[in-house]
Amino acid sequence: MSSATLRELLDQSPAAQRQVVLAGWEDHLAGEDLPVLLEVSHDGEPAVRLLAIGLLEELGEVAAVPRLCAAAADPDPAVREAAGAALRSFRDPAGGAASESAVVAALVSALGAASTTAADQPLIRAAVVAALREHRSPQARAPLTAALADPAPAVRREAVVSLAFLRDPTSVDALVAALSDDDAAVRRLAVGALAPWLGPATSGALATALGDADWQVRREAAIVLGRSALSSVVPALLRALDDQAWQVRRETILSLGRLRAVAAATPLLGFLSDSLADLRRAGATALGELGDGLAADQAAAARNRLEALRATDPDAEVRKAATRALTAFPIRSP
Image (cartoon, rainbow, N blue to C red):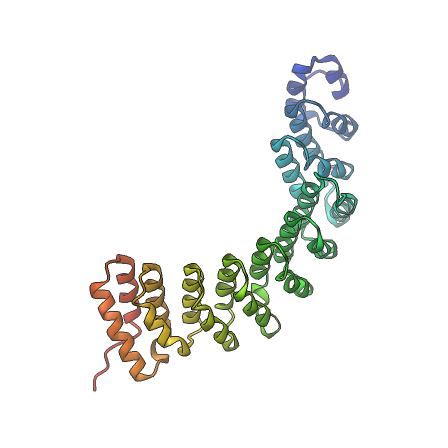
């Protein structure tokens, strides 16, 4: 490159050469280039916009944040992706808490400025919410919580993921409320986000999620409740053994095993005869978890059924599961 400024080189270059100029400018990047890059980021050629976005990210000037936010709604998918990535990794080269706070403040401002009615604005709001997650700032909690009420499901999904990532206990009530969202993906994500906060205050809401209209939400609830170590969730899980979706039944079986719910012994034995190999395998695994917690007659019945499964089941994985489970039922000398 010559000693000419970026603006001079761009002004002197035909349209086809603007990409070449921008691609070779990184080593010469300076704060004075900001106005030029902001202007070029609106170029009619997507490849030029893409390069400009990359240079704005590299420059790290907080003043570029609004433009990067707007570019998250660019008509070109590559530019949108680059803008979102730039927002998530954006750092002021000056570093330090003050500069990071300024970046977060700019993101929060952009989130508030993005219209809730314009067709392309949900893309911007979702990108900003995702960026706030990556900056891990306490400043982000309030706007992320507010984003749970956004009219666009994509924004609410990003908000749930972001609040889960921050693991702020003050967000628990908002996440519980998200279990009633009208978007199934939001509800499913909210179930997973509540996993770190399992306890009496959240287990009831999560147990209610076992009756959700969407089977994926119900499956996630069954998985999370199995990590709770709370005996109070067992009745809800026992009811979920009759779920219409086999995927939900499988995770419910496994969760009852993790909880060592001896009340589930009889239905678990029944699953050893299920027509689905996945459920027979889950039943065997869960019975192995119950092990010596069972009464003598239940343990004997479980051992007999597991031995038959190990010997005759047509599915190799079921036979392996039965073999592992039998280690929890040793034959005792009279």
